[in-house]
Amino acid sequence: MAELLHQLIEQSAMKTPDVAALWHKDACLSYRELQEKISAISAGLAAAGLARGERVGIYLPKQPETVFAMFGANRAGGAFVPINPLLKAPQVAYILRDCNIRILITSSQRLEILEDILAGCHDLRVIVTVDEQPPGTAPTCPQKVLRWGQLLNNPVLNEQPVTIDGDMAAILYTSGSTGNPKGVVLSHRNMVTGARSVAEYLGNIPGDRILAVLPFSFDYGLSQMTTAFLTGASVVLMDYLFPGDILKAIVRYRITGLAAVPPLWNQLAQLTWPPEAGKSLRYITNSGGAMPKAISGKLREQLPDTDIFLMYGLTEAFRSTYLPPDQIEIRPESIGKAIPNAEILVVREDGSECAPGEPGELVHRGALVAMGYWNDPDKTAERFKPCPGRPTELPLTEIAVWSGDQVRKDDEGYLYFISRKDEMIKTSGYRVSPTEVEEVVYGLEGVAELAAVGLPHQDLGQAILLVAAANPAITEEAVLNHCRQTLPNYMVPLAVRFIETLPRNQNGKIDRKLLANTYRDVFQY
Image (cartoon, rainbow, N blue to C red; front, side, top):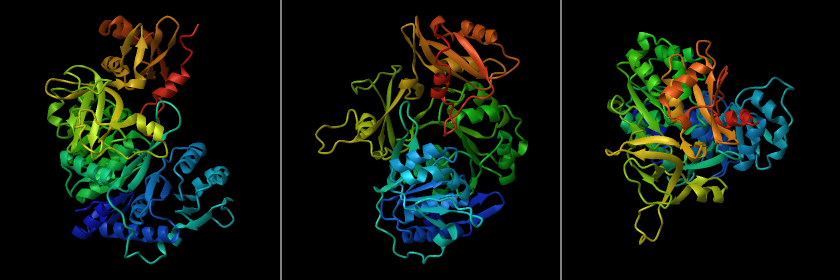
């Protein structure tokens, strides 16, 4: 049984070598071919000087070389750092410097974008471009630059570096409410256990074909690959331009599983799904925020034979809860219960467990809890703390991840997301969850996408602004009247702003922090 992340592919390559593992556009690689590429890249990285535990940065879109590089880095004894391809040079430079990346794998075009920042990346020794540059166009940089073909032309290593499941496998950067993004360090045990847990409740099988549309720098996006490779299923890599492209891909590749975040589901729910999509699509999943009831209802109408899994996760613990499809009609607002091999607690500030219905902080314990934040002991100590309620007589203290998210548990043990602590709106002495306001407005016909944010107000402390995607059929007064009819006065937004599209962060979630900064002075007099 595979214990290391790259062994997931080795295991499937031994069991089913000729089964399709990876699709990209018209190209398909079997598990045997995928394993051969990973072994070659592993040897190339070792020859380029990668030492055990060193980091390999990967700044590429979703393409086969991205996959080869990630698992090849692990096989060579290193850790991979997937860098969101949407990031610009300053953000990439921060990641390169912060986790001391030794080898960077990117494209020639992206290398040109990074030219001005490379001199400040003192730990970076080698850059690998996956494509060939025209003569005389290579940017000037202090690092050694290799071509992809040079990595492939090394003897495959029969003896791999000593690696155990507690060693670092990857660093994923996640945005916080303040400051620079934090690098969450994940071990092989974290990622393999996560793959087994998710594959268990999704019921993944070798015949599955999973469409990967989310970035691999996002743990939820990366999970699509790990669960597929664990079970011998296949993955289709896709960077889409329009939501409609996803529906075409589902039909073309006969996709059985699709994962997305709420803003994307909002867009997909507005489309007319072709009947062929529903015939192959066995399940869909949501994480990265609550899926509004109106959206899940539309999806159920169009996909009556497709299971919908509503989930909750955080990068620091990969995945925490899921709601079985048969519970959606009964409790559509729930994020479910703990995934296999995890325990979820709801606690007060002093660590004591909350009563049913009482709001508290979600605490995750188990093998999925990450190793901490890279090179940041202070922030690690804030989020990774002793597990509440564990025996104090034990010589070693168990560390759990304290999510910062407010949830409540009902009498049957099902969990309900309330809000992140740093997103709670404090107005007129009340604490208001933005998702509670949004849920009401999503019930208004014609509303597709919106966000509630708290802004400074001299009398209220904070006032609620609702920012919605432009729709000529909806007016500000109609939205406010609907809120007045369904919400207590203190929860009614003071104003509505319509914009073309709502901004998203690098993981595809609505960027509430940017909205709050953009409209910060709306209620200032």
